[in-house]
Amino acid sequence: MSDFSIERRMYYHNTDSGGVVYYGNYFLLLEEGRVEFLLNKGVSTAEYASEGIVFPVVCVDIKYKSPARYGDVVKIFTRVEKIGNTSMHFVQEIKRDEKLLVEAKTVWACVGPDFQTITVPDKIRKAINP
Image (cartoon, rainbow, N blue to C red):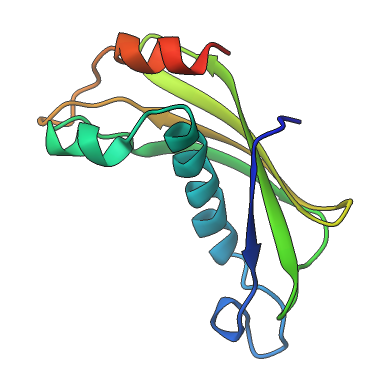
C-alpha cells in the first residue's frame, strides 16, 4: 500500500451503541483519505468545485475485516490505482497499528456543471502519476 496516510481518532460519535465504529462512517474516513491524498499532491477538489468540476463517487467495493472501536487511532492509506479518461480509481486500507480493518476500492467520475462526464484535467494527471 501507498506511503500516504492520515490518522484519525475514533470518537463516541463515530460509534454505535456498542462502542464499535458504525459501518457507514468508514465511507467518511475513506473520503477524507482521498481528499487529503490529492491535497498532498497539490490538487484541491474544492478549487475544482468552484469551477464547476466535481468528482462524485460512482462505485465502492468495501470489505470489512475487523472493527475499530471508540478511542482507537486508525490510519487511512490511499493510492491511485489508475486514472481513466473520465475517472480516477483509488485503493485504500484502514488499519489500527498493523491490523487491517477495512480495504476498499473507490471510483470517482469527473463531471462538469451539467453532471456529464468530462476528461480528468491534465493538472491532476501530472500531479498523481500513478
